Amino acid sequence: MELHHDKHHQAYVTNLNKALEATAAATAAGKFHDAAAQFSAIRFNGGGHINHSLFWEGLSPASSPDAQPSAAPKLLAAINNTWGSLDQFKSVFGTALLGIQGSGWGWLVKEPVTNQLRIVTLANQEAVVQGDTPLIGVDMWEHAYYLQYLNGKAAYVENIWKVINWKTAEARYTESREDAFKVLKVNI
Ligand SMILES: [Fe+2]
Image (tube, rainbow, N blue to C red; front, side, top):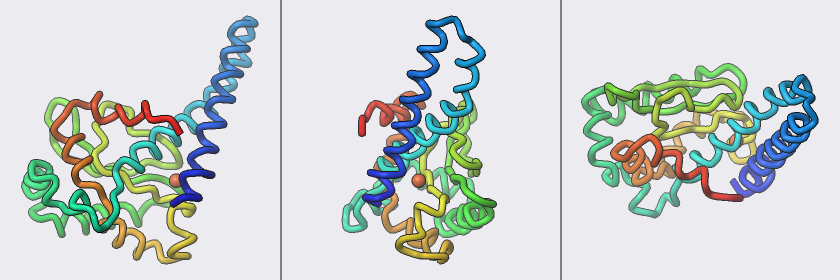
């Protein structure tokens, strides 16, 4: 996780900053075609920064009370209402995570307006920025698990539940969508 944070996440931040600076310089020079050429890098690296920022805040040491589902009573009730039980939710979520082809992310999100829970998977570094509130996110890039689990992707998905921060998930569920993204103000 240290390598993941200090090298992988840092690379997204570094490359996002480069792309933003290049965009600003091109815009200032009136070279809008050069500015537009940066959009793909901004989307990819900006998504990487958003996703990883949410991911770190969503993890907890396994020994912490925050790693217990009981730290999220309201979210747990909603999960039970939606999937019948926490185990059933984990099973459905796990299937979705393992079904991602290539690199991507899986999220438990709260839909706007209805507040319904939903599982979404997104490719590469596409970010949950379409209106849903991200509650629990799992990084399914190989760099997230390969050092510890090698090709044991299923074991990573099973064990990630030991370090999910349910307190964070509860706060994201009960507070506003804006609150859920406040984590992005954290600098690395
Ligand atoms: Fe990652």
